[in-house]
Image (cartoon, rainbow, N blue to C red):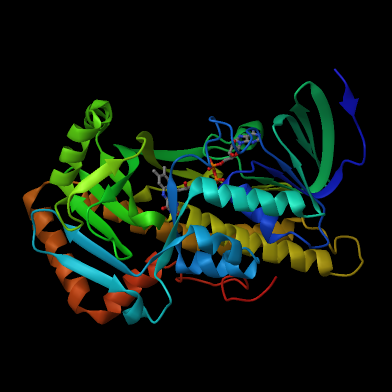
Length: 416
Ligand SMILES: Cc1cc2nc3c(=O)[nH]c(=O)nc-3n(C[C@H](O)[C@H](O)[C@H](O)COP(=O)(O)OP(=O)(O)OC[C@H]3O[C@@H](n4cnc5c(N)ncnc54)[C@H](O)[C@@H]3O)c2cc1C
């Protein structure tokens, strides 16, 4: 097989050009860093796992990060604002509403289709002079020593060897990089799946996101452009298989029964897809010259739309640390973006935010996904209390908007 050894030294090698890997590359476009992105599947490929038929609810904090990366103006035309979040418990009295007016922000968040987001990220990557995209390309070998990290990649029938100072694993929750480095992860299965689709409601969605807790699990309706709603329906695997197999009319009837008539008669429904749900956590965020971001480091239940927002906060911190390190003058370890001190700092500073999101999503899932009567009363009461206690409500809104915890430069609206 041919081997290509042309100028293959990079500062940073990113394995995985999904939502997290591509966003990291975009954050570092037009910097002094020379970056390689290795992605297994092309954007338009049906097997591309990141840019599929899902939508992503971006928090207000994530919008600020994209804004400072210079991407928000190209994302905004494809995004629908969330002005109100309406949280209710099916069959019980508790209801709470979070509004953009109460929080004093332009919007609580935004909903964008993964494919549209992917198109904008890839447009940025392919037009940036400091980024080289290897796609489709597979990682075959990974070696590292105290000076550099080296990978062998296979693209079609061409082998290439790339070296760099830092490698970032952004290759999702079955991370090959982590397997190659023997980094384990803990996993808690929820015995639930998410059935996702989109529907056209009879009434205007008026930019309201609905989170409805039902005895089988949470059901979310998120506002999309064109007065469609993105549906994320948490169910047992058996219920999901049953609903997946129904024809459109029967499926819409079942969905209407669960959601109610707040949005009028549900009309058209799009393609349906099912995703297993779990909480997964990497045993370590760094090893040698490797840092882990996104789903490879942490996968959470989509109940509160936190997963990619959390990944963007990994990216905001890591990109800040490497840009600062690159700018440091000469010296033996100065400017070493894969150095131990930098990577340990990344792992340490991300710990608290990640743990907080684990706790937040896991508590929501456990409290709001069962029909035990005392618990049902308790959660009605907690929704009622959240609604009447402004401080708690503000805390909940801050968590939803991705504004809790230490904010990075990008998170604070500053350039890198
Ligand atoms: C139903 C559902 C709804 C969700 N809704 C939201 C939401 O509203 N808001 C939110 O913030 N988050 C949401 N999430 C979470 C979000 O989808 C993830 O956080 C996000 O996809 C993580 O991106 P990633 O790039 O880390 O991983 P992935 O999306 O898994 O991407 C990994 C990439 O790496 C590539 N790859 C894998 N292995 C290799 C290899 N060896 N070599 C090269 N490339 C490789 C893959 O092809 C892929 O492109 C949701 C998740 C689910 C399941």
